Structure formats: structure tokens, C-alpha cells
Length: 282
Image (cartoon, one colour):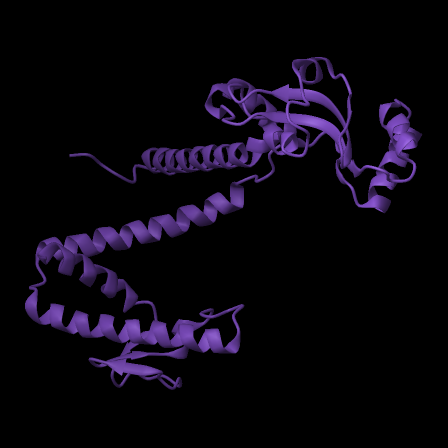
């Protein structure tokens, strides 16, 4: 319990030093929003609270903040009366203050120096070296796929265009799908979950021949015509395709850069101080 109170007092010590919580009688032109235990909550403290919300939600957020502030002040008053400010508490306060100041300075410098651009080459390099970390868990494919109602006009033409290698025919396929509002996938670079495509097809329509040799599936049942060409298949035991994990890889690379900047910064400060004789070890 004592540890909780000590930690609580440290947090409120810094909250009270942020300009929004003033002592009674403080010289200020601001009209206080609330008062508790001789401390005042001023409008300058709550700037930004409720930003982007509706007026109703913003007022509710302000009410919640103010009520919590009052509770904190009341708890601080009780804690002040029941906890003796020892050398240990003063040291903890100083350590906490030092940590806050250092973190603020380091964060500012990191943001100045950090290059947030991650190139495709960097993504590919990290992915290639760490594929074992990205086991897919599901199967993925790159494909062209069209599912159209049986009896649709120009269906035979669609099949001919779909199987053609001519770019103009592929454009005709896209136009056909747009006009007839078909279920389709026509982006060869897009990875999609294999099972989601399978669900659109008749049972057992896809064979290893379609997955491994890019053979075109041309199937019709009582309701629909199905056309499918698989360009690449990734089993669930294989590494997930790069596009599916590149956001995670980017976060990792940026985190590594941040750590490197921080290490270099601390080394710079230390080496400069050492060169200038700014510290001594007794």
C-alpha cells in the first residue's frame, strides 16, 4: 500500500508542476474550471481534450477529466498528511523527473534524425533473411478469377478473352466484369487467401495441376461459369507472402533505426563529455 501511495504522489507531483494545477491565490488571468484542496484546474491544462469529437462527446470527456482531476487532488491531500517525504521519496522524484526530461530530449532528437522511408529493397532483404519467422498459417495465391452467372450474354467471348495472352483481351475481361458486376480477381500482384477463392468454386474443382502448372480452370455448374488461373501458390507451411507482412517488417526496421539513433546519441554525449573532462570517477 505504501508503495502505491509513493508512486501515486510522484505522478501527482509532476502533474502539479505542468502549469494547469495552481495553488490558491496564484496570479493568473485564467478563470479556473475546478478547485480541490487549494489546487486549481485551468483551461490551459485541458487544451486538446475532446479534439475531433462532437460537442456532446467533448463536454463529456471534459467532465470525466475534471472529475478524475478532483479525485487525484483529494487523494494527494490525504497522502501528504499520511506519508512522510523521506530521502527515498525525494530521490525517486528526482529520478522520475530526470527520466522524463531525458526521454523528451531523446524523442525530439530521434524524430529529427529518423528517416521513416523504407525502400522495397530493404523490405525484401529483411524478409529474405527472416522468412522462418513468417510462416503463413493459411495458404495464399496470386490469380485471375471470374465467377459469372450461367447464361450471361457473351459468355463464350469471355472465356476466349480470359484464356488469351493479349493485353487487349484482358482489358475486355475487366470491362465485362465491371459491366456484369461479377465476382472477380484481376490483379495478378494481389495475394488472396486460397480458401476464400475455393469457397467460390464447385467442390474439388481445383487440383494440383491448377496450383502448380498455371493450368486454367474452366468449369460450369447449374448456376455459374468459373474461370481461374493461379500464377503462384503458397502453402500454409510456407512463409507468408511479403505484401502480407511488409507493414510489420517496416515497423521492425524503423524500431531498429530508432534504437541505433539512440545508441549513437548516448555515445556522442558520453564521448564529448569524456573529451572535455566533464565527469570524474572517484
